[in-house]
Length: 244
Image (cartoon, rainbow, N blue to C red; front, side, top):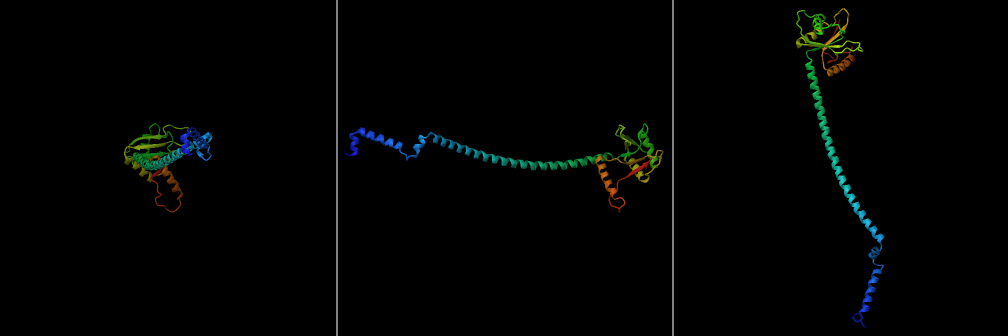
């Protein structure tokens, strides 16, 4: 009897045969997928592995984005630093130019001024302007009929310090520039005048602090050349020492 005939004639055997076949397929060791389906630990490990791979992929993506952002940021900062350095250099140049201009304006405003150093305190009495107007012709042997107008004169600093042993400087401002020049020219001709107390004063042009600093440096260099051959250019502007 053939199998097809059995199936038709004995349906019970056919059902039993089908059940055994399906059971055999489930228990067959040759099917690798069956073990994973029956082993929950292995399935969980594979799930964890998949999630780790996903995390690694995301970390790689984040790392790439961070590197790109960092490179762009560093490039931007470098460009900004170069721009700032250029701006700072420009501002420094402008500041130096402005300081030079301010110093020039300050010295121009002092063109009518003279500075006197060494006049004893209280030698002028109560009126310093009147005292200087009378003493300049005497110190420098100027004509008595010379009309000289002093706009103002004061000692600097205004307050007398008990700890300072030297007399305070005097700043004199003339009404006319020509009067100041007359005094300076006279200091070149008559540099020493003897008076009662034999004090020595110095009269010279009133300069700004920056010019005075430069002159001190120049004087130090000039002292090093004294006694040597003439060095062109080492010549200070007019300045006189007058003995009282």
